Amino acid sequence: MQNICEIIISDMLSKNNSITSLDAAMNVLKLHYDNNVGYVLLVSSLHEKFHNGNLQIPMNIVIGNWKYITKNYYIPERIQKVIEGFTKIQTVNEYTWQKDQYLLLQA
View 1 (spheres, helix red, strand yellow):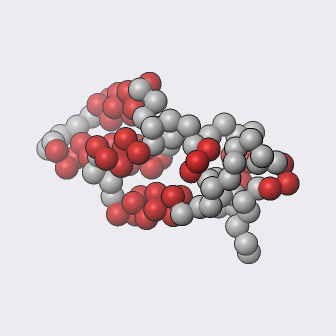
View 2: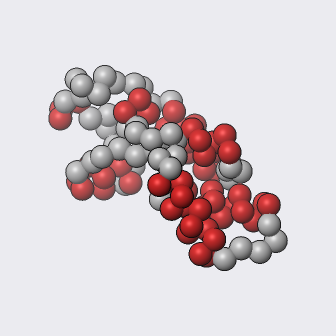
View 3: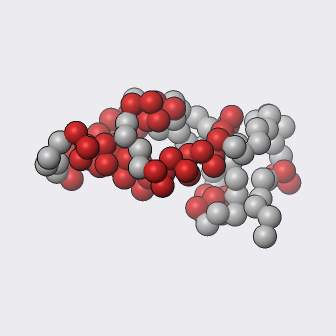
């Protein structure tokens, strides 16, 4: 969510001289409402592992039109690198992805 907010604010600032936090929030909500944000349903423990960098999620199981943002918004370089990293994660068949087959980062 933080990356999406940063994308929206950066994009709005690149196009306008002034914005409000309400403007940014409304744009973020619209992206979610229109299903233009990628998401994966996770239990809380896996969600925590993902945000701590200990779980990789293959893009082929991401729900939502996540490419919409990459095609329609200015994306800061730092976030572009994050997106590029996500797209390099190997794909798995979502119907055979078992509990013991998590793509964990190697320490």
